[in-house]
Image (cartoon, rainbow, N blue to C red; front, top):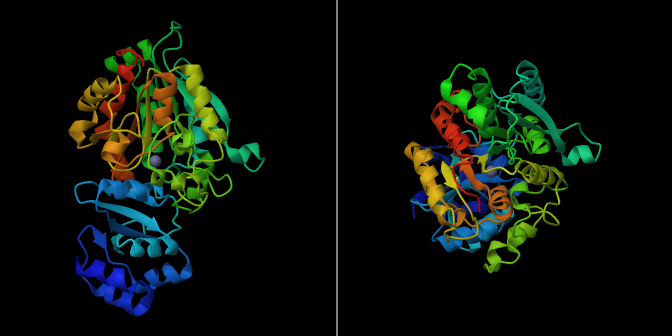
Length: 418
Ligand SMILES: [Zn+2]
């Protein structure tokens, strides 16, 4: 056990003196030391959460921690570590279970409240830019209001879930559809930006770039770049850790879809389910399948568009996840997913597999619903290495991922449905 972990493990309740000792220790290079004042103010006594790196001992334990509703991210299967944003109650729980953790914090994740980083567009800007795009390229772009967010259904805010369809609209013969969603989890900032760049690319290069012209002549691309608008606006207001929507204590939309909701109809350990029914946890699944307006909007869109390929863009971890999240078993299209993975993000260092294989077990996700209910070749891309990359990092990610997005559009219609 490294000295740092040992100290934290034993001394959480000792207060400032222990933290002063800790801050003098040398920290691993990827972590920055945290000032005692900050740790004290965000520490166990104040009731606020803080970010730690914990050391899980086996995949069953990781599955249990994730299933408990703990806010886990940055899972590293080689090192058997994960980042976690833990509450004082969870500190006690981890300590009791003898699960080690370091208080070292990841750069850029120190504060609960932070403004939107420079270079990111707000929801209001996104809405305006989509309207401008539709006005500029009427022959290529159809902008639709996909439906209301929870806050709008309550008369609390004017938030709509925008859906953009891009295709050569002169050619009205039915075309295979590739669909993308982004911003299902509010704090994951890069996916929204990447999808906005994809729309810019497809429109500005149509008629200039041969491949893109051909793609839009023969395919339809449907993009909902910001699904969880209510949550995203919270992030813009400084609630940088907001993941869920804003209904009550928040529902994790990516556990709310109507496909084995709460693992219904499946035989899984009870420990995987605990957090799904905890309204204060980060994976609270709501009161019923598709209980949330945002989920209903995405489900209705899939029902209407019948995508051949579907990609839900999340952050972070550099993973391509394919169905089903609750199992390590192959599905009929596993060979196709493996092929697409090899043709897209594998060379960028992404890992590929089901969530149970390479992350932790999940259910009722957007991805599983798209495959399980609509037979779409469906995947989640976890992009980047942080929730809040700098604008120049986003630019680099876009340059790297652009060919993969185009390949996924092209894959529409190339493979059979489920
Ligand atoms: Zn996510």
